[in-house]
Each structure stands twice: as C-alpha cells, then as structure tokens.
Image (cartoon, rainbow, N blue to C red):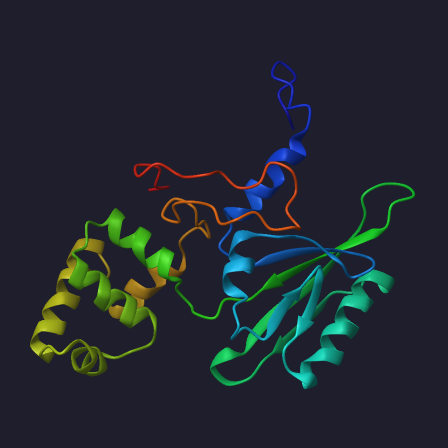
Length: 229
C-alpha cells in the first residue's frame, strides 16, 4: 500500500517497462488477439535465431512446425478460457519451457491479457555468475571455473577446456569454497542459483527500444557502481 503522505507518480505505468527489464526471465505481455504488447530485455536478448520462439512483428511464433499448434492452443486457452499452460518448445539443447498465464481484463470493457514467461536455458545465468564473482572478489580464473561448474562440467572437463592441470582446477575450486563459505561444489552452485533474478546492474546500456515497449523504456546506462550487491 502506498504511503498517503507520498502519493504515487501520476503515471506509474512509465515504470512498468523498467521493472520488467530488471527481471532475469524472459517475459512477454500479449493481448486477447495474441498480439505482443511488450517484451522485456531478457526476452528480446534470448530470442535469437536459435531460440525456438520468435517475434515476427507483434506476433509470437514457434520456429518448429511441431511446436506451432501447442503454442497457439496454449495462447488461445489463456485468452479465451483463462487457463494456465506449461509447455516445452524446441528440441535438444535448444528446448525451452514456458508458462502461459492469463491475466484477465484490466478493467470493464477491456480485453484480456496474458503473460508468457520463458524458462531459463541454463541453471545459472552468465550475469548471475558475474554478480556472484564481484560480490565475493573472485579472480577472473576463478570466475571461469565457477561458470563452468554452473554449466555442469566436472573438474576434468574444465581442466581440458581451459588447458590447465587438474591440480590447478582443484586449487581454484578450493579457493572458491574458501571465499564463499561453500562446503561443496553442489553448495557453491546452489548459492549462485538462489540469487535474486535481477539483471541490469552488469548489463550496462539498454538495447534499442522495441516496438512493443511501454512508455518510459529501460534506463539508458547503469553506472559502474550500481551493482545490486
């Protein structure tokens, strides 16, 4: 509830786009005609040529023909019947889960809207690793090892890919545990995966405005010392 001594801005919607751009999950707002009204920063960044979902104009479409009907059915179920759906599109390394959530009408006489939330393609995102590394004063080498561990690689694979010995990798892992207080690699990864899903502190500048963006847009550039931590 807002403090009545300090009334909210006259147009709070100007902040909505910025708020969504801070969340480290791709999110899209669609109307009941299945048109994309807004896509946040992560959605626009992730939906590259390899992503199973694509934005074509103001339409959300599936790259693969087998995904087209399930996606359309889920969107229509949300828009017309108010049903939530969870589905997976794509295949192999490019498979992505998504949730379709009906939001209902914003007011009388207004059409319904729905939220599409994209699942992560990695347990620990690159920015989460970088935030964690900055917070714990990790070296560049330690950060690379941490990123590899979060990607599911074991120490021998990390050593081979980075061209160093197993002894070096184990020493770096020991240093990671000492700096973070993690009692195991599993605990170390859990710490990173439990970080708040915020992105802009290390993102730098906002991308070019999308045609779907609400008024206000994203902040131009975050200062170097604006990290959440």
